[in-house]
Length: 285
Image (tube, rainbow, N blue to C red; front, top):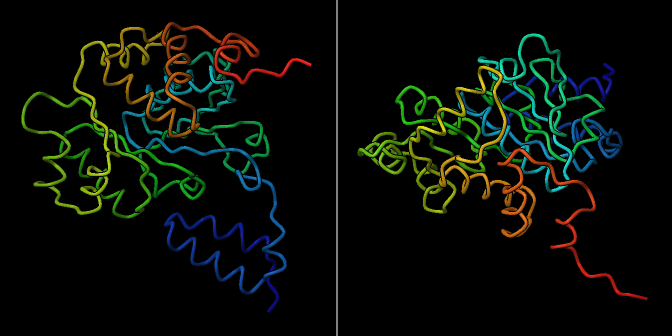
C-alpha cells in the first residue's frame, strides 16, 4: 500500500498529545528519511517564528501587555485569542473584524491558522488558550506559560494540563491573597506534584498578589478600554520583564526601557533612541 508522506505528516498534527505526536514523527523519519529531510516552511519550521503559549483563562491581558513590550524591542508580534471567553473580541468591540492592528501589534481571534504562511512574517506569536492539549497549535509551541489564580477548580485544571504535557516553561499564579493559600502551599500540600515543586524550586513559578488596579485594567479591557498600564502592580511588571527577557535574551536595561514606553502607551520607533542607547558603537572610518 502506497502512502503519501506529506498527507501522513499533516495527519499527525491531529494528535494533540505531544508524546504521541513526537513518537509518530520519529517513525515517519525512519520510514521516509529522504522526505523527512525536506522540510516545508510553515508553522514556524525553518523560520525565526517563536510560538508562545499562554494557557489559562486569565491570559489575554498579560498577552496584550507583553506584546507592547516586544513591539518596542523591534519585534513583529501577533496575538491569537483561542480562549472561550474571547477577550480580544470585546477589547476591540463587535464592530471590528479580525485581524486587527493596534499600536503596531496584530491581533486575531478564533480564526487563527497555525499553518498560515503569513505567520512567518512575525518574530513572536502569542497564543492565548484555555487548554493546551485540545488545540493543534499546542504542538507548535516553543515555550508555554500556564496561568491560574488560586481558585481550586482553576488550579486543579492547570495542574492536570501540566501533568499531561510536561512542557511548562513557567507558571504564573495570579490574584494571590494575603492568606495561607499561595503557590508553594498548593503545590506542596494540596496537589503534591514533584514536577510542580521542582519548577517552584528552580524559580519558574511567578506569583502576582491580588491588586485592585490590575483587576481594574483587566475588566476595562472587556469593555474596549486599553490606553496604557502605567499603574500596574510592581509584581505584575516584574513578571512581564522576566518573560520578555526569557523570550528575547535581551538584558534587563533594554527590557525596562521598552516597558517604560509600553506602559505609557507609547511606541518606540525603529532606529531610535533605544538602538542609540544600547546598540554597539560603530567604528568610524
